[in-house]
Length: 69
Image (cartoon, rainbow, N blue to C red; front, top):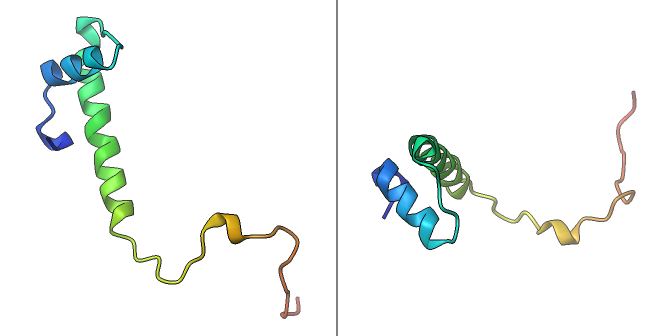
């Protein structure tokens, strides 16, 4: 199921299955939040990171500054 199809009752059902029962007044807000998160993550998945190394390869303080101010 995609987050675009997530209705408030479905959000409540998924939350309950995860052990997080929701009060009825929170169902719509949780569904809207899940849809927003899904839209942000889908944009991030489209990014072409190419040869970008993982963050574990970064060493703070090891930058080489070749420009002048």
